[in-house]
Length: 228
Image 1 (cartoon, rainbow, N blue to C red):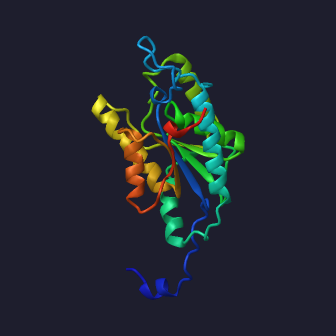
Image 2 (image 1 turned 90 degrees about the vertical axis):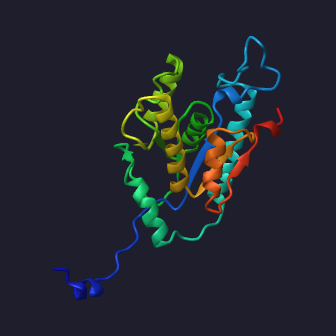
Image 3 (image 1 turned 180 degrees about the horizontal axis):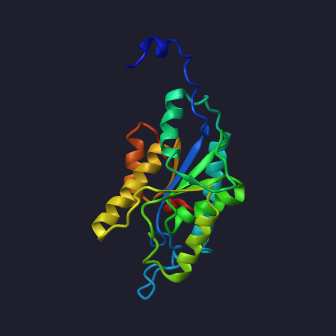
């Protein structure tokens, strides 16, 4: 039998210790990241898949600038309910052996090809730990060998990894639904969302829409407006 008198007399539990700021990224895959003038009939993706292409280089710089601005932005201490909400998501993360989460800021990435992985590189060089939010095991199984090798390096440098869906999809429809669930996990666990988005429909637009349903405003970087 529950002793309600005892429960009422117990001191309230302190809020869980969680990062005071969580920044997430969403953005286009390489086929939407071609530099102007590089798309041709024989090369429909232009230089989008080239890590060092001029557009992606500038976008990485913008991601760093926006991250630094968000880190410097004054914030109120996180409330107990907010801390408990975040703790419920971070409890799903498998942390790297050498990393212990605390109050310091942390970042989230879906670690897909393109902007997701570019942001991980930016954050790693900044010293900002990031969590790899993976939609399902072996999401890279259709990627070419060089992309799989890069993906393995991104995962190896992560402060933690969470598989939003523990099982592999059995078809493309299931995979698509799992990708959307990954994006929604990101939105629910972050305080700020940086979106590298050209306004087109797709996974990035869904992520921005879902995040902004909570009355927050994503930090938008439009590749079409980048000056090269």
